Image 1 (cartoon, rainbow, N blue to C red):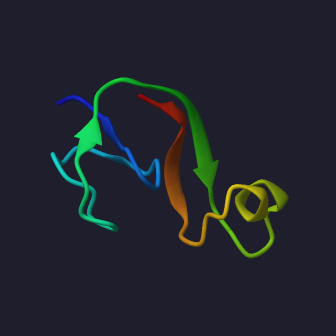
Image 2 (image 1 turned 60 degrees about the horizontal axis):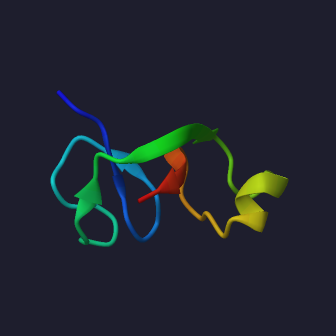
Length: 60
């Protein structure tokens, strides 16, 4: 199973479309960011991430 990243919110998923924003996901991504508590995370605040989960740093 290939992991994919949403082209809009960069959330990592195994589906063809993002379960959060319903846009196509890409297999061409790099960098892994895991957000556990977005309310306390400075990085999540900087990247405007509101939900916990796995995110790509770059998606093409």
